[in-house]
Length: 230
Image 1 (cartoon, rainbow, N blue to C red):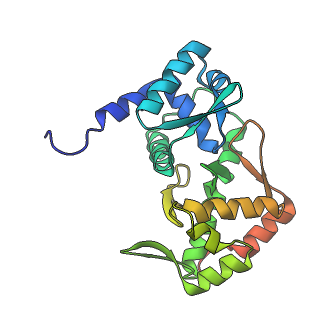
Image 2 (cartoon, rainbow, N blue to C red):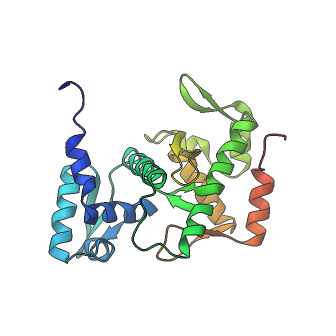
Image 3 (cartoon, one colour):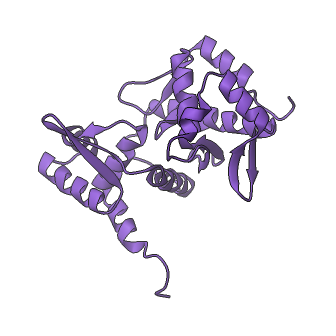
C-alpha cells in the first residue's frame, strides 16, 4: 500500500546508532551543545554536526544559537512520546544498551521524560489522579475535573498561566519501563518542577534519573498514594 504517511524516512533517521544516542540524550529535556552530543553519540564533532543537521531537517530536533554555541533540543513533545514508545518496544524485545549499569534501577524508579516525571513514580502520580477522578479520560482526551483543578492550584501550580500557553495541558505518555501511562503535557512538566521546588526530588547529574529524598518520597506517597482505595 502506497497511501498514508511515509514512516520509512523517519525510521531511517532514528535507526542510526549515533543519532539514536543523540535523541536519547535529549530526552532529559535539557538543551545540549554539539560537543556534548558528540560525547553522548561516541563519534567525532564533525560527524555529530552532520547527524544533528539531518535530525533538524527531519523534524526531530531544533537548535538555537547563543553566544559561541549552538544549543540543541528535541523539536516537540510529540517527538519525545515517539521515542519513549520506541524505548518500550525495545525493552519488550530485550534490546539493551551496551552500557547498562547501576543507574538502571534509579531510571526505572523515577526519571525525566522531556521534563515530566516518568518511571514508577510517574505512573503512580498518573494513577492516583485518575483514581480520584481528578484526571478524566474521555473521548475528548485527558482533562482535569473541577476537583482536580482545585487540587492542582492548591498544590501551588498556576493553571491559568499553563492554559494561556499553546502547549496541551494534559497528555498521556506510555512509560517505557512500566508499560503503563504517565502524565505529560504542560501540567506534567509543572508538577515535576513544583516537586523540585518543594525539595522533594532533584535531578541526578549526567543522568535522566531523579532522586527523591526520604522526606520527599513520604510526601509524594501521601499526595499521590498507591492503589485505588482512597
